[in-house]
Length: 139
Image (cartoon, rainbow, N blue to C red; front, side):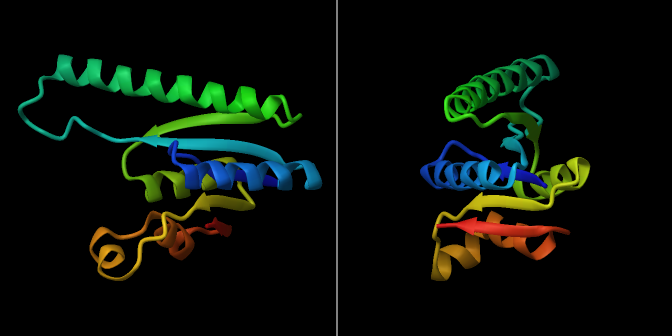
């Protein structure tokens, strides 16, 4: 079994990671953690060289964060691969699940309700709706 965990550094993502770790141990599953860096180079006011520096900085930060996460998991006997993407989170998480052949995607839920959810959308809802595999949403 392959488990993909979406992680954005939030407390909700940390809860999802904990649950996925427990499941990986119980089922002997492989675990991959994906984080999606925002694409901040959408403006014409940012030069290509500035965009490259921004992107490298974002990736470096994301990689450092994910190494800390995997080091913590390793202390619990859990091995996880890291994938860092950039773009729209829901799309990139779904794409990564397809690429690695994930059987399950585990995501945290930020708990938006009512108008906020309607206007802002929900990454976890989009993943549930469009993923080809099972999705576990952790509150």
